[in-house]
Amino acid sequence: MAWMAAATLCCRLLRLPSARRPPSSRTRCSAAQSPDAVDKEYADLNLRPLYPNRGHHMRIRQHVNPLSSSFSEPTEPPEWKEVFDDPLLPLMVDIGCGSGRFLIWHAKNSDKRQNYLGLEIREKLVERAQFWVNELGLMNVCFMFANATVSFQKIISSYPGPLSLVSILCPDPHFKKRHHKRRVLQQPLVDSITKNLCLGGRAQCTAWR
Image: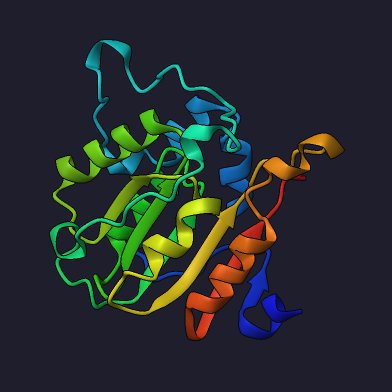
């Protein structure tokens, strides 16, 4: 498979530079089902609620139809010089980044030799994640409201630095056959990841159990 030839596909914890052991992918998968577990796991980030009177718990749709006409057009890439201090650094992309805490944790605790980009199809999550980024004053992480299956190529091909790592953690498996077309990991996205990864780049995926 071209996917396997061009990248290392793993189902294990992302081992990135950090101040302490990061939350495991298994923890992230299980925590995705429990907002309280997520808050506890990332408590050391000291993230303020976007809406203080609601706490961290926002009413977020669990499922968004990626086949909707509103998600059929690629999202325009940002001005990279405006979102990252150094847009020439290697880039990690987390597809379906959810709350964004995973990337924020790494961005805050890393040695600042890598940029982080989260792509998420639920706009409220992106709004809150970017609020946290601004609160923490981080200039090595950014979140975008986008359908990655449609927008990945246009966004990433415009990035001036190398794409070193792509993670897809606990994507919705859409078990029913009629819903397979809603899966994020479609062949066009796989091809785009393979095409854009730098030499030695990696793609890592974890699955629900």
